[in-house]
Amino acid sequence: MSESEQSITVDEAYEQDNDKSIKFLRPRFHAEAFPTVQIFGYVGSLVLTFAAYFLVMNHVLPVLALLIIILTLAALQAALQLGVFMHVQEGRGMAWQIIPLYLVFLIAFGMVGMSIWIMLFKSGVS
Image (cartoon, rainbow, N blue to C red; front, side, top):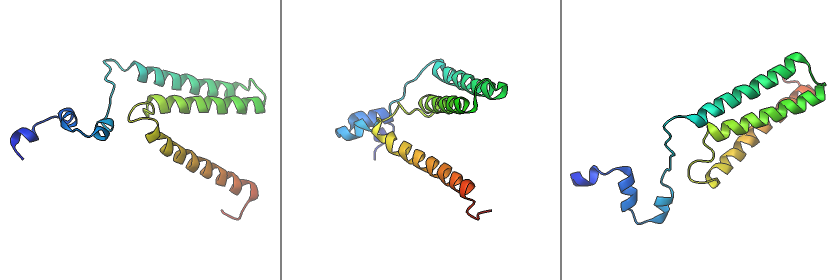
């Protein structure tokens, strides 16, 4: 390899390659001067957390309604954090992220389901 081939940037290497599949896999990052999206995500997470805390500590609703609202707030917060901090909408497209998300949900529901199974049926695990 000559010295000129070693000193090219990653972008130049992608541009020199004629294979379109390589150009499709090229990382695309959105550069922003001030992290407004991350600040919005952080403040939104704080608001959702404090809303759930306020509802539980002040007993403002019946138990079933409170449970439904808490689970809704948790789902909203999970979606917010996936979108803002885990960069789900960035990258190579949704196809690359759907399978790992399904796997995460499968593992999480499996752990919660087995925990509930053990607690409800007292299966002798102690």
